[in-house]
Length: 205
Figure 1: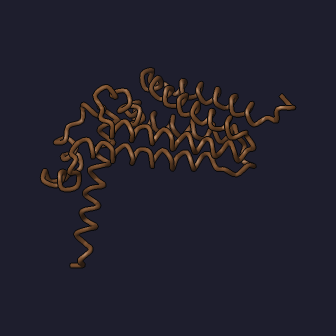
Figure 2: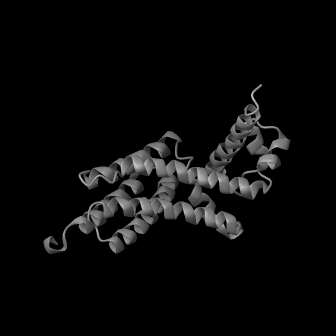
Figure 3: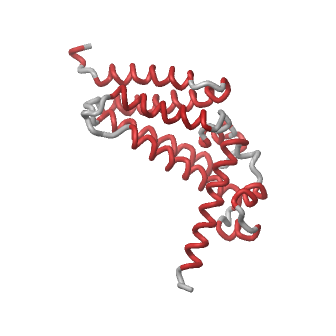
């Protein structure tokens, strides 16, 4: 047996637990997700959780939020290329379509896990709050980067990056409640209008 094989197996078990925590949090929230349920979902032995996550549920939750942030970052990057020749409206529509498809595929049982934890913030720790904030900031920065590449003024791009995340996160919650992609579509249309106006040279407005 290779000396590195146990490490790879350990990493795989740690990853499975983070994925399971993420999937369960999306469905039932952070407070409603018990460690036994995570272990069962991940097919991991009980003793392995505190070996990989000595901080217990809080550390596992932070890891799951970071995983969600990475997944959404990959989706945003795929849709919002910084190529200045990319059509702005098509890029926004592509991102909204991808999110709507994810929700519909889960029959509206899955939402953004970061917003799920944020809504429970009264019971959340500082570590979880920071993980949520970092996720939102990273997504807003991607939108900002995209807009700056299209010659939007940096200050305006920063404002729109924050607004985009707020619009879409709120729309995801309402879409889940209504079991409809329409709130997401509405948010996308509003965002498209705001970003289009920002990308138009001031002398042409």
